[in-house]
Image (cartoon, rainbow, N blue to C red; front, side):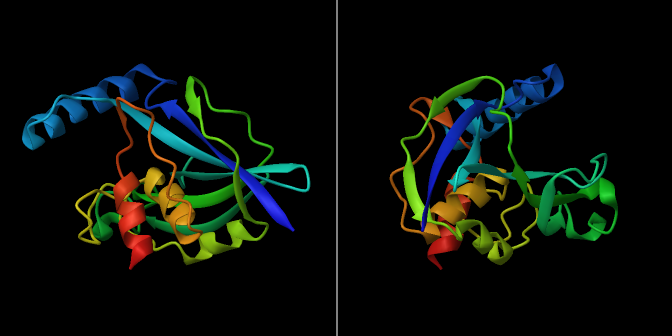
Length: 179
C-alpha cells in the first residue's frame, strides 16, 4: 500500500507580526552576507494521506503544547546543545493527525507517491540543533530540513521552494539525507 503526500508552502510568520518581522530582518542580514537580494521565506508542511487519514509532520517547541492527538518521534535542542536540557530550548518532531492546512499557503506541490510507512522513517531523523549547521551542510537545521530529508530519502528530488522564495534549512535536510 502506498501513501500520497504533498508539500504545502506557507509564508514564514504569517500567523504573527513578531515572527514575520524578525524573519524578514534575519533574511536581509543573511542575503547581505551572501551578496544576494533578500527573498520571501517559506515554511514547508508535509502532509501524508494513507487510507484516507491525513497526517502532517510538525516541528515545534516542546513547551506550551497539550498532549492532543500527536505522536512525538524525536526531540532536539534549539540554538545550543548546552541549553537543550531546558524545555524552552527544545523542539519536538511529531506526527499530527487530521491537521488544518497552514495559514497563508502560497503553493501546494503535486501529489507525491511515497510508501505507506514513510512516517516511520521520522524516527531516523538526526536530532540536530535547530538553527545551527552542525552537519556542515552550509545551511542551518530547521523544520524545512526534516521535510526535505524525508523526501530525499525516498528519492523525491523534484520538490523545492516556490520561485522567488527561500526555505531556510531545505538544503541541509537534502545534504544530510544523501550521506
